[in-house]
Amino acid sequence: MQSGLSQPIEVAVEVQYLQQESAPDADRYVFAYTITISNHSSVPSQLLNRHWIITDGRGDVQEVAGPGVIGQQPWLAAGEQFTYSSGAVLKTPVGTMQGSYEFRTDSDERFDVPIEIFSLRVANMVH
Image (cartoon, rainbow, N blue to C red; front, side, top):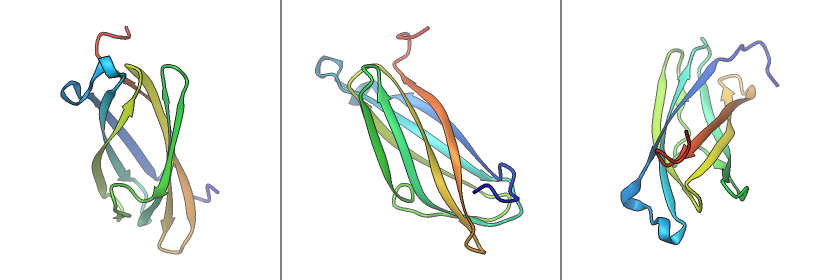
């Protein structure tokens, strides 16, 4: 349900490979990602749930879903941002993530915000 809201929430992603926490010999590649969620509408909204699809270079898929992010369900007033960091562990040096956040407005209208696919990759592995 998109309602009258036109892309009210923007999601920006930054990814970092954590070499010190990874163990390539054991097929363990650890990535940190920082998400910045910006409310560009005039309507305050709360992040209720997250849904992630994490795919490694072999095509193995992990799905992560549940309430909020990092134990929080932040309210974003008009013009506000919320930034958090989390991580993902892959068995390959390359992979992708994509997903969505479910939000609700003050009037209890619910809407999904898609998170476009982004890459998880060890530097110099993919050109």
